[in-house]
Structures are given as C-alpha cells and as structure tokens.
Image 1 (cartoon, helix red, strand yellow):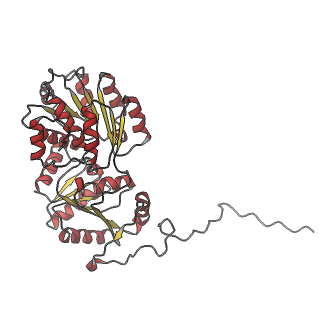
Image 2 (cartoon, rainbow, N blue to C red):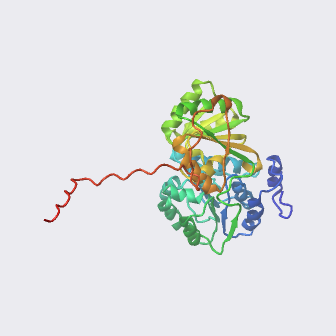
Image 3 (tube, rainbow, N blue to C red):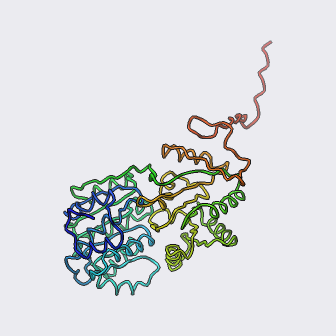
Length: 410
C-alpha cells in the first residue's frame, strides 16, 4: 500500500485483508508526515479516508511497545459516541494480532467498567464530556501521551465542548504530537489550530463545498407531506440500493416516518438524540449487518456515521444549511464508490433548496416519478438567484388616526 514506507509486517497484512489496496489522497499526504512526528491540520471532505490516515501511522507507532499502566500513548477525541465506536472498530481491525488495546470512553456506559479497561489501554478514544470525569477521578493520566488527535474539531466546537477541551489540554504534556482534523475551517477551528499546533503542515484535500463526483444528486418536487410519503415509498421500492438513509430535520418527524415505513413493511430503524446509548449501538450494528436496510435519522447521523453499502440518501426534508447537506449526502459515495442523493422539495422548501444550490455552485437535476407527478411544478417566476420571485406586498398604512386635512385659509 505504502511502498516507500516500512510498516510492521502484521499491519501490512491487516491492510491487505481489509482491502486497502491503494491509499486515498489524504492518506498519501498525511501518513508519511505523521510518521515523521509532525503536527498536522487536515481539512478533507467526508468519505475521503481521514480515519485511516491517522490510524495507520498510529498503529505503526504503538506496535513499537506497550504503554505503562494507566498511561495511554495516544488519545483520539471525537464529538459523538457513534464516531468513537467506529474509530474503535477500525483500530481493532488494523491492530489485529498486535496485542494492542484501545478503550472507548463515552457517556451511557458504566464508569467503573471503563475505569478497569483503562488500566491496559494503549489508545483512548473519547468524547470530551466523558474523558474529563475520568481525568478528575485520576482513572487516567496523560504523562506518557505522545499523540493527541482531535477528530471533527469543527463539530466538537459547535456542540459546546470548548470548555472541556481546555480542561483536557491543560493536562496534556507540551512535548507531544498533535493532529487536528476538520471538514470545515471556521474561525474557531483556525484559532484552536494556532493554539495547539507547533510548526504544523496543512493538508487540504478537496473543497468544503464540493460533493464527491460519484454521488448523483437530484430533486423530486412534492405537493405536501402526504405526497412526499408516497414518493418516499416509491423510491425505496424502486431504486437500487443495499442500504438507504432517510434524513429528517426533527426527532418528531423521524419518529413519525419510522412508524410509517414499518407499517408499509420496510425494514426500517430509527436513530436520533433521544435514543438510549445501547439502542443506538444496536441500531447501527443492525444497519451495518443488513438486518435493517433503511435508517431514518436526524442530522445526528450526518457526520461520523460510516457504514459500507449506503447507496441511497433521501432528504425527506431539505437541510437548513449547505454544510449539513454536504454531510448528509456524504454518507453515500464514500471512498470512491457511487451513490445517489435525492431531496424531496415542497413549495415551502424551494428557496432553501435554491440557497443550497448557490452554496454548492450547482443545479440539481429534476427527477420525475411518472406515477406520482403532483401539481407543484416549481415557482412561476424565479429571480436570477434561483429563488422564487414573489409579488411585493403593499405597505400597510401607518397605525393611528389619520390627520384631518388642513382647512384652506380664508
């Protein structure tokens, strides 16, 4: 895979077993620099292989020797539990046969059990919200920390982890290697990078407003929610896919839609923020194994969820921001595969859809379902921006009594 880098023989074997025949662009650029001990700022779109880009050199470095008790050599910080589980699973596959131990620290699991597992951990994968209590309890110490990785740093800051991050960083040794990964680079992330990284290299792959080439994007015009429900059933019955993800903007709509699809005999499962931790893991695992083929979810799953075989993404409701759209459709077409993203657009969503087109600098292809063509054909007139051109409302007269006209002078 990396012909010019001498990797541990077992790691090379594991890479072959996992089908890592060719490195992705971000892996080609990041792996050699990480093995040289450099600090990195990596900006790369979803599905580009960022997790492998840091786990491959991490496994290589950890294979050189075990960690002292309660002294992990590396920590990966992630914003959500689901991403922690995925990183753990990928690490275990890459480190198979190397006698390396990784521990996931997330909320919703028994604190004491986590504490016991920490005693033998080479790598800790944690959400900031769960790592801080373990640090305060002295279940874990960071004196031997060689590598700190912040995965999806933009999302961590968006979800209010800044204070927790500051607590963790004050306990990390200054003599360490740091990797900061972010799909987007807002001001907060750039400021964090300046604070954390020493003489870093910046690896930038792709543009944040680009959808992967292998993803076919289209819109279907809908009259209302009932019309959307029928169109959704048609798409799930007639499009070709192994697994499909249906995105909603709210937990209420996700719950309604999950029940609706189950009633219509689809193998559907529900995932949103109110689902308990055990339920989340069971849902994702069932989706991975194909026990369920349709995952109904909110934007909880728009980032961090990496499941093979997702060939279809349907936006039941258009996301409210362009970057959310990018993360949603990025669940398909991953690692060079092909995928399809279809958005159902009712009259109230046209302008939102148009804004996302402008954000992406593209025009979505219209898809017709001949048996379900509705009365809504789009706005009668559109502005140069693509938004609907509405008639201007007449200004209402000022409230209060009208002044009496002045009497003419005699």
